[in-house]
Amino acid sequence: MFLFISRPMGTLGSRMQAIRERLGEDVAGRLDALHLNALRTGLVSMEDLQEAYRKTRDINLNPNRLNHLWLVGIVFFILVATPVFYETISFLLGVRCFLPNNYLVWEATRPISDCSFCKGVRGPLILSNLTREEFAPHAYSSLPIIVKKAVAHWPAQKRMSFGYIRDLYDSVPGSTDSMCQFQHFNSDMKSLKEIFEMPLGRSNLSQGAPWFVGWSVCHPTVLAELRKLYPRPHFLPEDAEMPHTDFILMGYEQGAVMHLEYIPRLMWQAQLKGNKSWYLAPAPECDHQCQPFSFYVEPGDAVLVDTRLWYHANTIPKGQFSLTIQSEYG
Image 1 (spheres, rainbow, N blue to C red):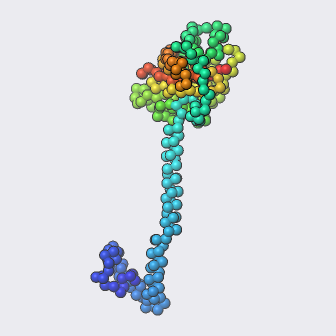
Image 2: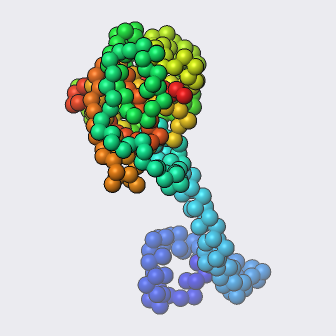
Image 3: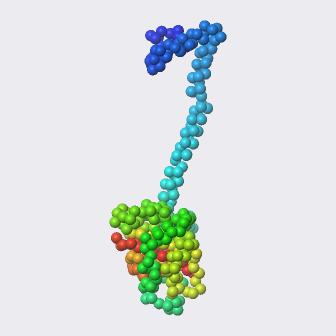
């Protein structure tokens, strides 16, 4: 190489010596001979060879080249990191109750309660199974209500189960891919498809961690089949409006965390399987006038709570499987 042709090995710097050693004497000698032959032609000079070397060296130090490398690196990072980032954020932002994604904004801007809904309330109103006329005075009350054994006659209480619901969805093409609202609460599962692909041991909690999920039944075919197993509660007002979707909540132990819902109507739940403990609390501005309380529901009971006013959470006894249908009326 022309850097070495006129310099004996003893005068080379340690870096140059290392380069010649890596190349080997045979390759280095051939390069030296190539440069000597080029000089003998008279077409190039030593200065020409040195200038060519400097230009080659400057390419490696070119700031534009470094900028290009940075750009390539950033693009590569985005391509690799974006899917991971999306999956992580999607999981972390999974809402733990049936609330819109702007819940924090709504909570911060909700009207201050006058606390009249909770003054003097120490627990739910417990009613035996009753007629529509008997229920009419309580139909649109903010007082929490339990109607004992109100849905015990529904076919859903005997026929609906995790396996039945899974098989129904499996029989309807595209039903698990529809954009229905899904809530994983504290569970580690992020989609309805993932729920129905659980191993048997995890689904019946003989293995793995407890899970509790809920979702809106918005696929029309699935909703029509499920509603064959449960009518609207017979005691609700005949002219009450009902939504075009229902919710299913099921799982073990964890239940829903304390929250308030921003929905247009009153809420009712039918407890089909398992027992469930409810925890209700007034809005924070009512703490000095009202008290939190809890109550217990059993399979066959119907629960009515104005979840727009009462903060609420629930848990399920250890080892029990809870299955609930939830909807609205108003």
